[in-house]
Length: 242
Image (cartoon, rainbow, N blue to C red):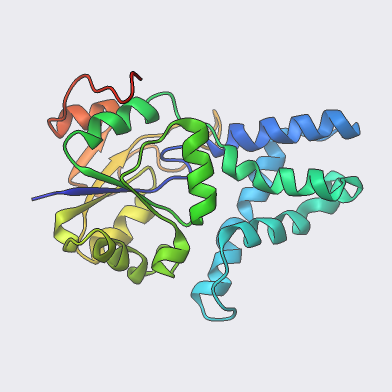
């Protein structure tokens, strides 16, 4: 029986592309930069997997995602004229990942799912990042499983297995919830149940990936409300008057 839902966060729970674009636009206005904010978000995100792969492969020791985001921003900074930023503004931009907005169904959808299951973030983001993001977007987790808690970056098998251990459950009692087929495939291989949630605009209006389930996942939902309906969760849930 499923007792806990483990959530991918970037793209599944929060809209990283619009959040990063918005903060870059603020920096651009301050410094008079004339660059495409959406392309900036895409280029910064494109550094994400390669930077983590160095950790996964053992080429470097584990470091938290904030450090990788800082290094990744330096990799693309010349293309966007960011060398003129003050140290304060540079740090603010690096931490734009801490301020990402949730999808419109995320906050109340998580509350509904929380009424029946343990809900935990299972993200590659570090604890501080997920905590700040959750405060910003009203994401009411029972547990925050930042990458430094499990000590591995998804899709390493250990990332999922240690997460299950942290909530005190067996893998078959946990379900991975993600908008990315590859994440679910990795979770399934180590025994977790799976739920695909469609986020058709994660990469913008011309998105081509993850527009449909690639396998027969245990659940397929259009959003968190739909998933809550399919899992038999309460229809109306409030927390501190929300």
